[in-house]
Image 1 (cartoon, one colour):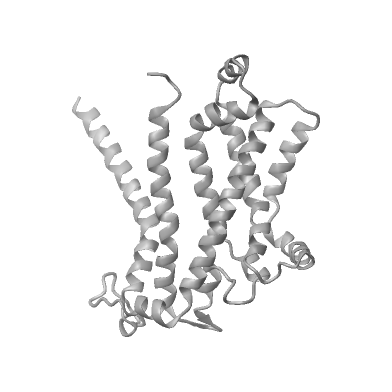
Image 2 (cartoon, rainbow, N blue to C red):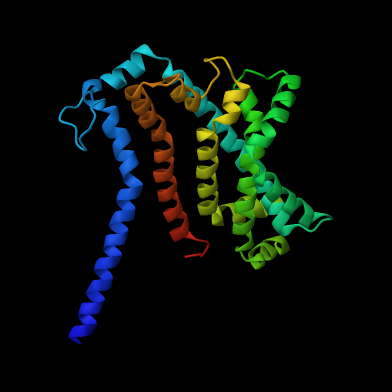
Amino acid sequence: MATRKASYWRKMVLIYLIVIMAVIFALFPIYWMIRSSLTPNKIMYEVNPAIIPRQLTLNHYKELFTETTFMRYFKNSLYVATLTTLISIVISVLASYSLTRLRFRFRPLVSRSIILSYLLPAAVLFIPMHVLISRLGFIDTKNALLIVYPTFTIPYCCYMLISYFRTIPASIEEAALIDGCSYLQVLRKIILPIAAPGIAVVMTFSFTLAWKEFLYALVLTTSPSEQTVTIGIASFRFSDQYIWGLLMSSSVIASIPTMFLYLLSQKFMIGGLTAGSVKS
């Protein structure tokens, strides 16, 4: 008995050590970003910086908000990411439901094509995209990103939602169809409430993909008034000189929308899972 207890506690200690190390590994970059954003320059550039700075300051945030145009980049990203997410969700919900429940020719081909289009890297497509956007007359506008971003967010959303819709029993829809509902009514009144947790997750990832995108924003927009937050953060680097205070403080501000959305979607997911589709 004593040997079993000792073995059990050794396993638990080992598990907790691994978990603690993993948490530190994951959270330390976030801590260092926040720490650097609050550290004065004279301390930040020391040869051996301390883990906990001996002095804190808000001067980097003050400079960021008063002496730079960072908030304009922030607003542009918020505009692009929000509209991209809405467009992606509407199209992907309709497409995923159709591919899951409706029967038509070339349905497997369309489904595979969606997955393959998501696998194509942006580095391969940004030149054709630049040519297309130039011919459409949207070059150097943030609306150009609204055309390009759905090309990788919609395939991702469809891939995730197709898997989620397949887990919903078809018998629920068949009963509604027998009662006289159309496919759109079934989707709106039955499928969407049940699939709300999955849609919340997909919305969160779609927003994150659009928010953090860099390459297309760099290639398709050149005016500071049209560029997004990722370009704004990169603008605080001049040749081989890094303005770490502004880089870290802008990174903290840029992290807030996605962090807030993850927390919000987590609560929504819990509510959707507990509500379910069972009548009380």
